[in-house]
Image 1 (tube, rainbow, N blue to C red):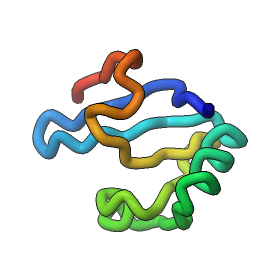
Image 2: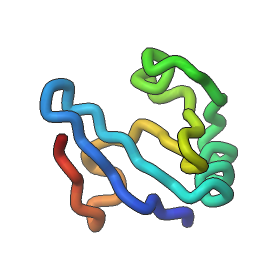
Image 3: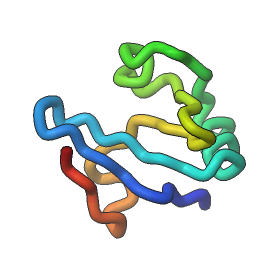
Length: 73
């Protein structure tokens, strides 16, 4: 199973965003049938992923990857 490097949670929206290394993230996205986007609104839907600074970012639920502590911003 591909594990994210970190997960951040927005204190205003409670959006949990996981950041994966590029190849791990692409594998995770293929497993979950996610499509690439450049729009944050698509990322929030949980049906898409974004590539930012070489990392793959996806929306995850609070219950996903419970062993990784969330960074709140």
